Amino acid sequence: MAFAPPSFILANIFARRALLFESHLINMFIGNNINIITPCTGKCELDVDAICKGCYRSSSEINDWINKSEDEKISIVIRCKKMIAQQS
Image 1 (tube, helix red, strand yellow):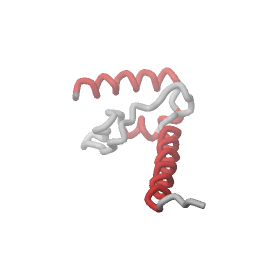
Image 2 (tube, helix red, strand yellow; image 1 turned 90 degrees about the vertical axis):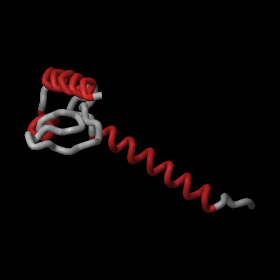
Image 3 (spheres, rainbow, N blue to C red; image 1 turned 135 degrees about the vertical axis):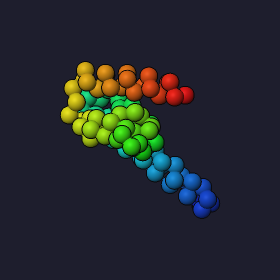
């Protein structure tokens, strides 16, 4: 009976954990409506005006995201994506 080398086993374990972590992150960034994904870029840092430097949402928009209506989320996502594009 042949055994897989330890490096292969570890690589397999890490790959599975990475996939689980990625799916967890995707689920985390979905609000109360699975059709609208947040503009979060994962580069979360608030400036002096409490605006995220990564996605350009205010801290109140971030904290209250799950309670926003679909229309509010769409409006915020559009505004944030425009800001992200301008900064690129």
